[in-house]
Amino acid sequence: MSAPKIRIAGVSKSFQSDGRAAAALGGVDLDVAERELLCLLGPSGCGKSTLLNIVAGFLTPSTGTVFVDGRAVTGPGADRGVVFQEYVLFPWLTVAGNVEFGPKLAGAAAAERQQAVARYLDLVGLGAHATKFPAQLSGGMKQRVAIARALANHPSIILMDEPFGALDAQTREVLQDELSRIQRVEHKTIVFVTHSIREAVYLADRVVVMTSAPGRIKQIFDVKLPEVRDRFAPEFTEIEAAITRSVKEEVRKVHE
Amino acid sequence: MKIRVLALFVVLVAWAAIAWGNRLIEVINPAIVPTPAEVFVTTAGALRDGSLVRNLATSLVRVLEGFAIAAAAALGLGVLAALCAPLRTMIEPVIEFVRPIPPLAFLPMFLVWFGLGESSKVAFIAYTTFFPMFIGVAASVLRVDVMLLRAAASLGATRADLLRRVMLPAALPGIIVALRLGFGLALFVIVGAEFIGADAGLGNLIMEGRTYFNPPLIVMGALMLGALGSLVNALLLGVERRFVHAQDS
View (cartoon, rainbow over the protein chains, first blue to last red):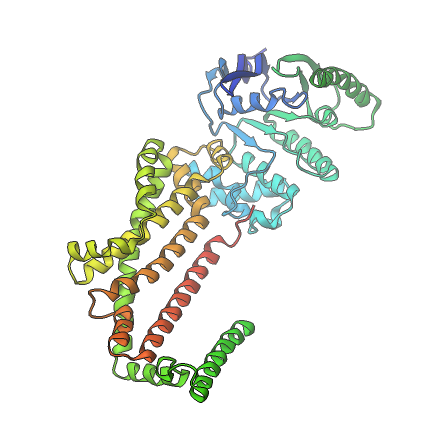
């Protein structure tokens, strides 16, 4: 097997609160393979978003190191695109302006940028909305723009932090379908944080269940399902049930 | 729009009713309650002899110069203070001490330092308008959502990119509000500055009205300031709408 795309080695994180250190993440070792879609799943407060923020370079780990292509992560970078739960589009730019933000920073020529905008807006089904401003879009559309913005910058890794968490159930499933379709075209390495077990089983190659705080890896599930998945297939439900049992144990610990 | 015009018209009618009513029953000395007609005649006269335009232009130039100096300083230092925490810690107590002092308390010092000419008025306006604009600019840049910075950094933005392409555009709505407040304040204090030690300007015109007992002249000066203020405010609102039209998410 080739070297992992992302290697998380002994990463822990504690935050200072009221003068005391509260452990959010308790020592995580995890490899993510190239082109893999890996879901991080766990009870709220288990540190899964913290772990993602460390991989993104927004937070520094208290111990341990994250390696991308063998190089230690020291801060955010264009090799790791991020899609946030709250979209975080640039409100003063149009949809097209948002999508071409990364290529523009990289010094791409206008024609090249235009091409990227057209291609990725088409990919997320927003070709007709290029001149609109984020404020004029629905939540689902904003998140599509955010995905197009991340893709247009050609990162090899995309980090997604509960990207569909703020959307209604229908929109959420539509976007899961689209992400699954896009991944079959783009083949990115994706780390996807969610608290929806169904979402994880629908999208992931592997599902990592984390323990309650301080978060550690509890169990890793290989999702051996076809690329295009049926949410009502018996095999789907079977994996869903197994993961649900694993997560429930941790949720119970939180409430005890 | 119609309602706005109507509201102004109602105020005019009320003024006319009070002034002419007072002429009829003489509650107070009619000489100190000028009628709209008297003010109109005075204005027409001031327009004809050029004194209105000259005084208006004098005040406006002073305001614009002082405001431009203060705005440039407030933008530069405000952004710098927002970016540099140690600088902020140093500046803050000084500003918080100086800011509550009514600027007019320092006006005599400005006349002593800068003389009776233009520079004392310009410097005084710059001094007065700097503080609120500086605080507004620094606060707008400080308030920029850290998530926007993260989003840009993960798209490859350098520190310079973050400042130019994220912080400044994100802070722009707040910066424009700060400039509007500063300009309003400039019109506010120019009159005070021209009351003392000026030979031209709307404040000087109003003072002339007092010295030579000419109430219509005083009212005309005040109305001109109102017109000038609302005109400038409308202009800045237009600028704001042009740049900030789509920002609310």
